[in-house]
Amino acid sequence: MQFMAQHSNQSRLALVATLLILIAVSLVPTSVVAHDAGTFTVIVKESGPTPNNPQLVYNDSVWWYNVDSRENITHRIVMDSDGDGLYNGTLDWDSGNMSYECETDENGTKLDDDCRITYEIPFNGTWGVGTYEYQDISSDGTITNGTIVVISDVHIEEGDAPPPGYEFGNDDETQEPQSDEGEEERNWLLWLAGASGILSVLLIGLLLAMRTSDSMVKAEAEIEDNSSEMKSDSDITEIAEEE
Image (tube, rainbow, N blue to C red; front, side):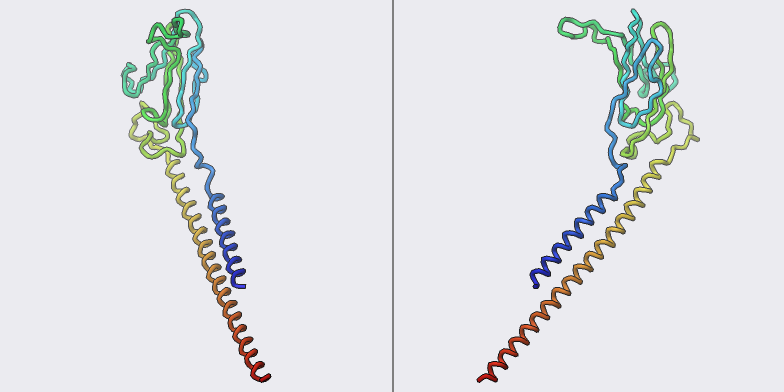
């Protein structure tokens, strides 16, 4: 009897523990899934970059690929972040002249190391969250404007990138960063506090249930012992009367 009660108690404990784990897993928000870094391709045509205003997530890259096959025409992707008229600043872009194709030898090695067809910018360090206004300058004098918008990822840590809403080249002191990340952090803390409270109540209930079950097992054991003792006394009395 005592063994069966202990076995039942262990079964209930395992069941409650399993339920607690399932509850904890179900409370985890799906927004914690990390964004996988990707590469966005911008096709540079005779008419300019296409698309010319993509939106990316922090940690993505943009890859410009020149497909303008006109003879002796090159394209140059530039951004003058400091507004000095040059493209040699720390935050400036300058792809150099991008050709339609590069001459190679029989082994596929470029004959001109400076020849390039593509240009890539990663938005994960020097360039982060913000709006980037750039230009495509064609060798025939045509200039086409383009925009890259980079939004924050939920897993960006403070200090890794400029605050949301920051625009490079716009250092106006009155510009106020958005507070979406702060709001998300506060919501996360509130959710965490609520989940902790729920789990605490469940654990307290589990401990009380275990204590009650132990008390019942002890009570049943005492009843069995008393019953055995009474039965033993009765047997002794019967033997004495027979003699």
